Length: 399
Image (tube, rainbow, N blue to C red; front, side, top):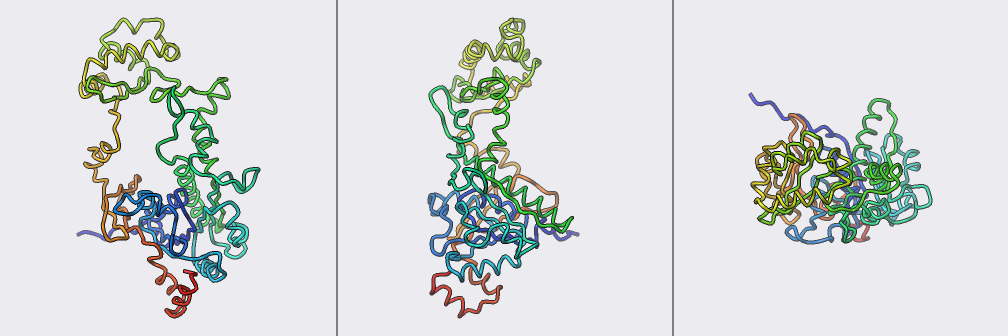
């Protein structure tokens, strides 16, 4: 006998989000993944500007499709008194309010955390900012790459030829993850103490946390880690090398046992084990160029498949350096059934990755990506607005 599937963990939780771009939508999509009802408030007509970042996914933006499944879209002009009144109605029945508007905009509209605490004592407000709501940069706009630059991340990425941005929106993703975990913590706190705590996350401070290791290294070592591509600043040998067939394979030596195995089984140079230049991890880092030359010569004698097999047999972690197409066809994703179709506003469907956290007995929620304002009439109807009143709001361009 098959029982009913367990309810999603956040079923019954309502999230209202005045969101755009990446950080806030990433936080709320993860709440939606867990069953929360997420009402996404968008500008009438154009919607979230991330809808127009590109048109590569059957005419939809790759960013928007990634970040906005399982949500409901409501259009509201929050510059109008009527639009703000409707948002106020929504918040009266919501558990969480998320916003990543321009600096100070939510407060100017009357929806700052302090104002909301007075009117809705059980509501959990979450603000995602660039550099925090206080301090000398509180009014400064912040985008992902700007924050990568300000935290020093860009000074670590790239190689000897120059800097490079991280290939994904790491500041936005970091802020979205911390907002998500902060909201879950606030929900738990409210459930156990009855107190609703406001949550604030800034892109800068989220990525600053991720920069802690190089920050410690720089503060206490007197110099920052060098920019060395796929090599590692404090471990050698560690990095990607081209095999005879032209494909790069990356490997890492983490301890003395692995160093001995590399010398004896892969490099076929057992005498290197006792070479004083390479006696310790620090020695190997100091003589990185000499080790790399030896490794590169060995790689040139074997194809990438053979290199991986030999490293595997020696117990040394390694991986081919895939491009995105190879990632899409990765056997782990296929064999573990990590792809599931998600419907698009136009009616088509595209494969999307399941959420990375599996909860035993809980099926993943993978509902459609909404069209701009797709759920406006239904949501307003739930709030008690008549069909005639909704038409009037549309005529006035409030929705």
